[in-house]
Length: 368
Ligand SMILES: Cc1cc2nc3c(=O)[nH]c(=O)nc-3n(C[C@H](O)[C@H](O)[C@H](O)COP(=O)(O)OP(=O)(O)OC[C@H]3O[C@@H](n4cnc5c(N)ncnc54)[C@H](O)[C@@H]3O)c2cc1C
Image (cartoon, rainbow, N blue to C red):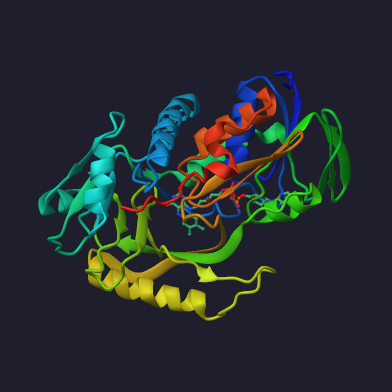
């Protein structure tokens, strides 16, 4: 066990590194947060993300409930609501199973709703008469605000430098070499997103991380709208069966993307260079059919690498090598407060919470 006032390095200031550094500070640790560029520039970039409780793995539903509780706590601590009250909508054939799972959970307010409620929560949507679920505690995450407020709190801890290597030299002696420096810490947490597997290799770990590329396109509502719930569309009713959408904090734009990633080689080569442009075309066509309340002219784009574990799109795990913890997975923005707390506990208390150990394959879809 490391002392609570331990000196901990966190590598990467995406949402997970920020969350971990914040939770470490709250537990009294001294933190150095290394970031190559701007906090939030990597996979955490962009104006919104979906918070949803619905996951195919019931353990991840529990985890999302925990994360939602800490988002509330952070909203109070940081003085700003970080999840919009408009809710999270899901449409399509998976809704019945998703609802059955969420309905069993006392911490989740999810219900099947009719077309009127769909239209009230998401006034930009086209007519749809299939099954709809509302997750009232879900909604768009105010990503820019969350990154900005956490970065502000961690300003003194931030070292803007690229980490080349992390090595364990002895008990509670972890060496971090950066472009222009060399420091020793009691322990380290690596939250470097796409950079995590290469730092892991230096520690003798081979993480089964697969890379892909994603694009999220933003559109402006044609009129002011009182609500813009997030949307998870697996229906196929509008020509696509895997679409995600979330709103910017001021509801001035709605970001829409396909769930599928564009394939990327191990060395980061885009295997089909036209892939991102094709996804944009599909998203624009989808908006024309499914979201006629949006102006179909794209306002902006977020192009991002994504990292994924082989057991599912929502898979997540934490590895350790002596005093170093490493995290990898996909769709983790929503879980960041819970992961930050668990990663802080991993290095301060000396053990990965069982659920997050790789052999437990958290986020694996359960056959229904
Ligand atoms: C388009 C898109 C839509 C998404 N939608 C959702 C969603 O709706 N809901 C959801 O929950 N999740 C969603 N996700 C996933 C979610 O955004 C990511 O899982 C999450 O942001 C990952 O955060 P991170 O901190 O692990 O990684 P990153 O944000 O990538 O942070 C890693 C940081 O480490 C830094 N770094 C890397 N290597 C080094 C090094 N050697 N030295 C120093 N710094 C280094 C990078 O510069 C970067 O800032 C989406 C992702 C994308 C791309």
